[in-house]
Image (tube, rainbow, N blue to C red; front, side):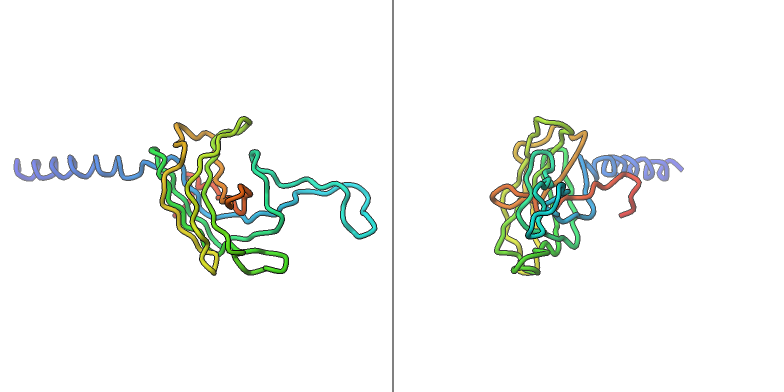
Length: 175
């Protein structure tokens, strides 16, 4: 009986600490939204059918590009130490003459944790998009987040425009 209790104590002594540190995630994202550069238009239409007033789809101070982009899937995991893994699939132009292509772009992940300005852009390095729009980022955010009360993850180009945004994974979401 004592040997059995010792074995169980040893098992729980090893397994419990491992499970406690198994997920030190600060925030996770599951799914993605491609950019629509204009969020609204107002005013009487011009003779050429364009609107005189448009509101650009600016997210936490980050401007959109000039063209639509779509993303098939996005998964991201940000750890408490600032390390981040992002897996993106199918980030491609969704309009214009280059539709369906990657425009030879490279992207970075940017985490923004503040709900209101001033915003701190926590960036990774750049990685090139594959021809099919897939990409992988395995990096450390600079600067690393101390906390992240209102997380937004943007996938941005070298000029800083956002192409896609991550969908926050809630604790009650299924994997």
